[in-house]
Length: 82
Length: 82
Length: 148
Length: 148
Image (cartoon, rainbow over all chains, first blue to last red; front, side):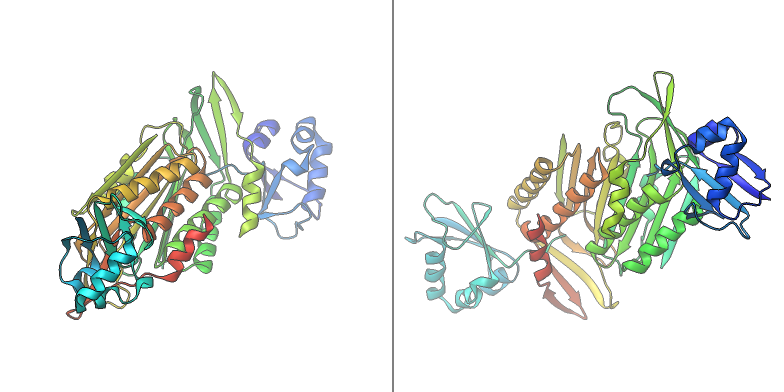
């Protein structure tokens, strides 16, 4: 079980800020594919991965990052702070 | 008659902050040569012109600047503000 | 080598933070601050809301500040960033750097800003004429990282 | 496009100046300040005295600030520089720039500092262990002008 968090328009498209996901996926990319296959709202959020960023256990990572031992994943658009 | 001002160690070497100078010099450099010939303290202050800066009517200038119409000259070391 | 990172919803007191930053340090000749303000060029912005990622935000900002301390000679570093709703003209965030040398203080502050913009988990949403829209990241902001 | 240049002997209130600078402007998203502090690395400095050239100082600083406004998109520029005696840790001077864009605010502040250092008529004299010595200009400060 992994905590999956969504922020900004990813959160809005998926319609919730956080959920627990049960998955056998071994990489972030595999988990994303599982989610996209699940429901239209995930497909809408994950359609263009180049427009997304991912954090693995609160550190920026890439979509090929392994999921072994990971407790928290987060998906969001490029940051716009400052 | 030109008002001649001295700052920082130039002022200290010459021993006064300001004086009025009567001169037929046509450039700053000529005036400096007149002053150097005048007294040892001027020679001490003006020995190395590369260590000095000059302002003509409160604008930085070079030693070849003409003196025609000039009311105020100032000599000082490189600035160290900030 | 003091480092302070603050993430909060409330406004911060810029004058007091600026006044107190590196105060009493006699070994630091140069202090730089940067402040980001909610900007409303067209005069049509009703407000802004900043979302962030609690937990990761503090870690990311601390990491960026530590990286700046590792690269430049910095006696003090401060980063304050707000989240939540803000009005035009309000201060969103500030960074401050103090160094023996002005070049270090300037470069470190620019580095902090460049990384904070693109690597700290904040997202801006603007509200104009009743509509809201997420602010898009700018290519220049991502490109700004290349110089470090 | 407000420009303020202040030359004075008294200390200035950095917190209040920082707080008030560009306050209420909704079109300027980026504010940078630089502050120069009397530095005493060895712990032996008793004091510093800054001499200046009344009349020329104000003109030179105004010219430098106007040049910055001509080169960058600046909504507000502030330069404050003290003269006279100062103790270690005291603030000598500050510049502040406000711009729609952070790169402009940073570059303009660095430009102001580089020019102020080598082109505004101030001279520092340090007093340590009863001896006084004029601070020598640094080649790096003169060289810093080349980048603009």
